[in-house]
Image: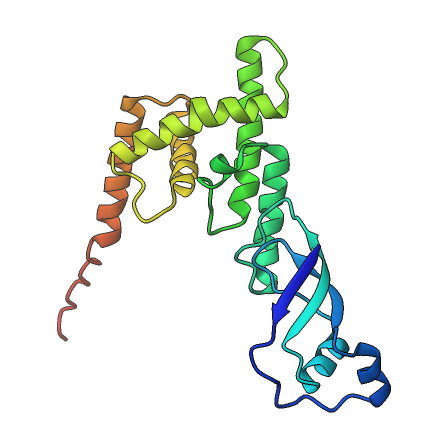
Length: 219
């Protein structure tokens, strides 16, 4: 794909090019490189750019190969961010959904993507057993998001049980507590009410003052 960029200001560390290099470049300076998805900066041929800057070029014509990734590359700033993207990529392979649905599923802990992927597969297995027919990954993901995730998130939001977490983090936390406390995979107003009471008890315990140490008899 053609790409055109303008030079904002010359580099103070630029060195003068060799005469043969400058003659080869001439007035039309070009380079090639690659651009990773949309937010990633362009990698350019450093030698060509340094020569163009040193000769006072204001425009560089480049032919860029754009790499379209499965997971959007937005937010990658350090090596640890690649771990989050890898778990998210695996989750998208196991739970194929539209981009609008993926935008609503976000975790600060990358491991939760793996846990949610297994939870969706388990939900799909139970759904196939109940319906006594086979469903592929796309149908399971579509039914889980429409019949399980969205209604539960609406219930939790109405009960004010999401708090400072993302809706996906609240869903995972309360789904785990539901099974530990009630040994059920069903959602209902009674289940949400029990979970709310448990959350309130935990909140009171966290804010309770530590017990006073008993006074020792002075000897």
